[in-house]
Amino acid sequence: MRLTRRIMAILLTLALASSLCPAAYAAIVEPFEDVPADAYYAPAVEWAVDTGVTDGIAPTLNSVRLPSTLTQLAFCAFHRCKSLERVSIPDGVSEISHTCFEFCDNLKEIYIPASVTKVAPFAFLSDSNLTTVYYGGSEEDWKKIDISTTENCNEYLLNANIIFNSTGLPSTSMENYP
Image (cartoon, rainbow, N blue to C red):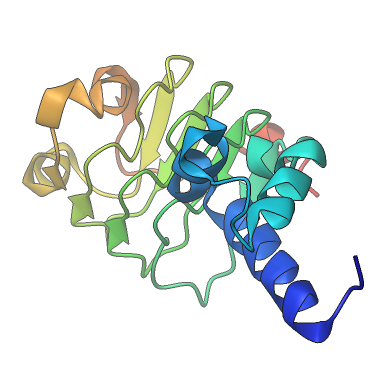
């Protein structure tokens, strides 16, 4: 098969989209029943599966301190980032989007600024190791956040130890931060 610009564009689009949000493409590649063998994109899907693109992002990323200019956490931003242990969300972010940290199996600590007013459904689904939330506001402020409880989708966030009036993650938590 000759690699044309069209095929390369399809491959790159699938690779990028799959790495940014594997859940959105899970239906295409897992299982393969919904990808017809004669579909023009079948080779791209097979390549994405074979190379591990659909397995989640950054297998060695364990700590993230997001830039202060960030104002929004996108849908699936860290979905299935299984090695992620610590995250510091900057002041100014107002919403933690749907499935943002879903299936981050090793997420233990997170800093959430007082600017956050909404935690969407499934933002922290299956994050059973999340034990500590450093929150930038008061306990009263925390109670005002619209945290989705649909099907217990954020139960680990709600059951974590919340440390109020925090200014961020403790410096020792980020010592291995890249």
